[in-house]
Image (cartoon, rainbow, N blue to C red; front, top):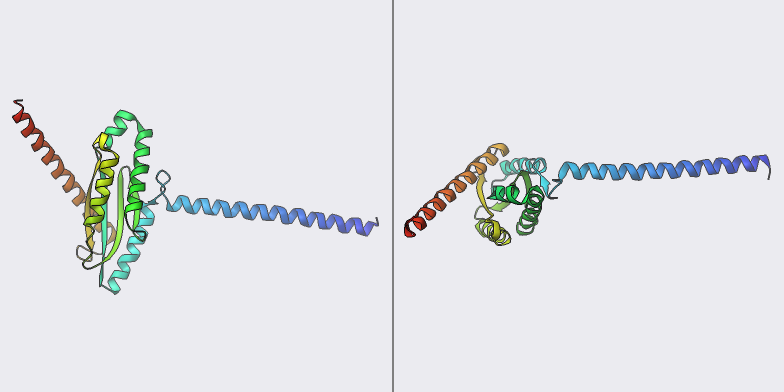
Length: 207
């Protein structure tokens, strides 16, 4: 083989190796970018959206609402009742499994175009877009029923509050706070009702 041919072959081998390494680097970069994007968008435990994606979506929908007020934006703040019982008695692993199951129920029972997120701990927030006559109670009742039946052994249920834009404002954080306040009001009423029920039962039993 002539020296020129050997030299040419070496050059081709070098270019092939360089191309292979470039392709591997590009594929690795694409993989890392995808992983970073997923980490930025999704809650690592439950796999549903995180709070930052939800707030970004909510702010964009509220901007749209300013230009055409023929629909409403519903912000739903959801908190688990009695979740602490699972963590305290069965441990955090079981608690994590519970949160994953709850997230799955929420994702499967809200509409496909609704945004559902884990807001933190055992708190979830959903954003729904609907018309002026939208009735979201059937969705929430169905979700509450499924969660209660899935965790009946632990008395797990949900409390929730709903804020409606533009009726109650058009600021994302204010709407979330309003929904949060309403959720705690529902939780407080539940505790009062349970306490009254327990007092009545104790009275009937002579305690």
